[in-house]
Amino acid sequence: MPQLLLMWLMVFSTSSDPSPSASAFLLAVDGEELPGPRTSFVVMPGDSILVSAPGASSWSFDAGVPRHAEGNAVRWTAPRSNGVFFVSVAGDSAVQTYTVIVPVETCRWRTETLNSFLIGSYGRPGDRSRLPPYFIELSSADVGARLSSHFTLGEFLGHVDGDFPQYMALDLALVDKLEAVLQAVEAVYPEAADIDIMSGFRTPAYNGAIGNETDFSMHLYGKAADVWIEGFPPNNLMDDIDRNKRVDVCDGEFLVDLVRRIEAGGGICVGGASAYRWTAQHGPFVHIDVRGRPAFWQTQRNLVPDPVI
Image (tube, rainbow, N blue to C red):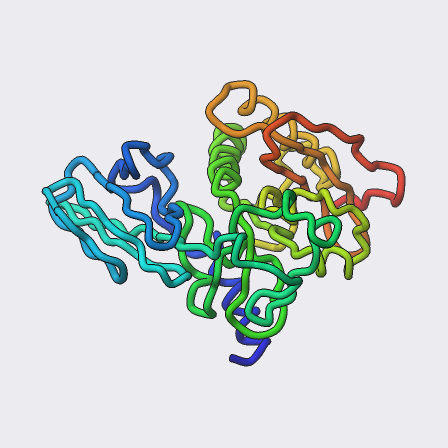
């Protein structure tokens, strides 16, 4: 696929697409319910799981082995091949499709490349303790696979290195957190339509190529996203969500305050959050991550003047 067309698909198969609201079913995987907006889950190759959903009457899998279907529950064995698969759940008045991610286990990755895809090195050579638990294998058709009501896989890929398949790390707790953030924003700024992701997963090789020296970035583990809030029509720029009649770093700080509030309320993973000011390349944005502990760093206000719009 030509690179320009591929990037078009990644940009437009995103949160700006018409998207469903909360899932039509309360899907549970091995007894644990998915968060309401989530329409995806991870199963390791060859593992057997029990999926259930109140109101479900039939199930359809495009891969793997379904067994012992009993109305609202079915036991399913994931394929041993890696990739992105789908299960459809039907009830009396609704049909819902879920994305099933069968990833590549880290133990299968021994060099700085995976199937010729350049990843780079996590820490010192031979140190495997800091590797992500798995990588997701994506074909060109998988970038539009929906993870939740507002997010697709392609949004978190961030950049394309070479041909497909591509590989990425992603913690679905980040997807859940961004959904919660958008809901909190909509409560105080109803014009919000999307959270746009400027940067999601980065390979260590790519992270170094763009000048980031740290090898502890949460982006390397699929645990971080740099985002801004947009209304409609989209203009690739943070909205004036604090309503001070200008688009500046203060909108980012307003968003960080909302993140801290929903973290304090419980139910989502805590992490780092910080606002970033205008540069010549982009408008204001906010870093949000799910590292599992609070992290703070000072907002950079004084490197360049903030334009006023």
